[in-house]
Length: 293
Image (spheres, rainbow, N blue to C red):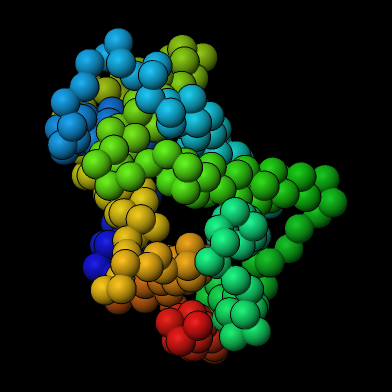
């Protein structure tokens, strides 16, 4: 399960980098755009299989990588807008609760992934734990006119994770994981360039070397989050059987949330309420139940 651990660590690193950007008061969009560039380059460098650009249209997964890449950049704008209008707590919960979509998809498309009573309890506890870990009392408010933003984020993030699962299940093996990840990030970068044409004020930031440095760090972490997740989904244990994808997604999601919250407390002195500690304990219990199932 080392790939799953590396996926959780990579995704948590993304949280830490964004927090640092907030502290040093740097805009996130230029860093995010460059992150996709560096993540794509890293994927091409680590790709173990020789290929030619003209061969890409013949690869089974090429067409599913396009909407995933485009959704990456769109969800960034929705995430930012929802955080401003609906609040960070509501937005965080909406984004993390979307894990229910790839879990349900895994149960549908995989003949070996069965919803056992123990796994059902683990899923409920995972969703509860995520919500309790993120919520900050007194900030969870939402007006009706702001409701559509978290809903779009919930559906969009669920669609992204589901498409990644579908690509892994149908097309992407270990040898093509790096190339698949590279093309996803390449599509996201191209989409970001198009958005940049409508936001020329950000161009001045690309003259700063530190923006490129943070972009490289974020790109490395972002690449790892996708690459290691797909490798974890493809992983076979000692008797050559797959680990249920619903378990992988469940542990990955609550692992990211719990570790991110703990890092926020230890590194940035963020305060945790009793309800947050209850959420962390609930999440830890869910991980144990997932492992037992």
